Image 1 (cartoon, rainbow, N blue to C red):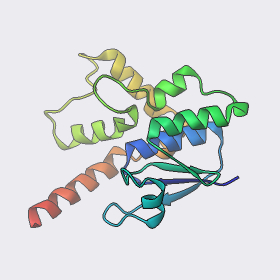
Image 2 (image 1 turned 60 degrees about the horizontal axis):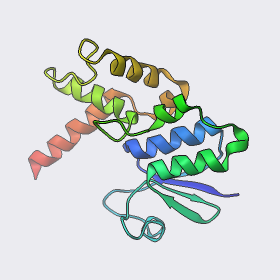
Image 3 (image 1 turned 45 degrees about the horizontal axis):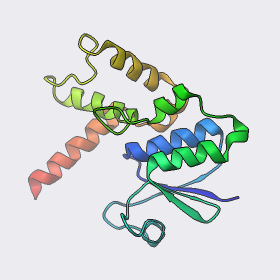
Length: 164
């Protein structure tokens, strides 16, 4: 049984899928796409949107991170269902955004701009607590990038934009 994930290292949607795969203990091959030059495999697997993430499972491509997470949970049900807490943790849509794997991005934005406080413990204590719980999960720590790395990436992009 072949399982391959097409993604980008900075993609919260790809992180969501990676977290689900790791929680289920699924062995998979990860293929890193290049944003500027999409592979033939990606273009053939997602011909309409040409976007990541794409999970190729038994030669069948599955697109859209939440559809992929549902497939992972249903197909690998014998390994145990993801608990409702774990499913919420890895990506049920919240009112303000696509998934909590953006938590590192929130922290990076706060590091780059001291006027920004997205996960404000005083204003949104439950959300801030939940974000901290999410980031403390061992599987999440393994997948998500540290905010420092995202800050460096952001600075590099700003520098490149100023050059152009």
